[in-house]
Length: 79
Image 1 (cartoon, rainbow, N blue to C red):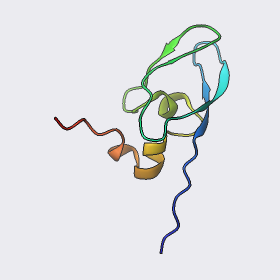
Image 2 (image 1 turned 45 degrees about the horizontal axis):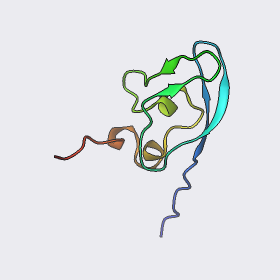
Image 3 (image 1 turned 60 degrees about the vertical axis):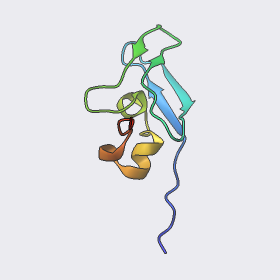
């Protein structure tokens, strides 16, 4: 039986504008699309091809990417 993959919930996000870094706790089952830098006020958004700010600016990708990979992250809502 394969071992369960341990998901890391802590990621150090770095502001590309001023270099400020902060350890943040990521949501377990969602992507975070915005992060406001507490130092310079820059509003970060994901880079093209990334699903969230943690995948773009964090030291650890978001939990959905850790578990399923980039192609399965944050699928469009079914409606």
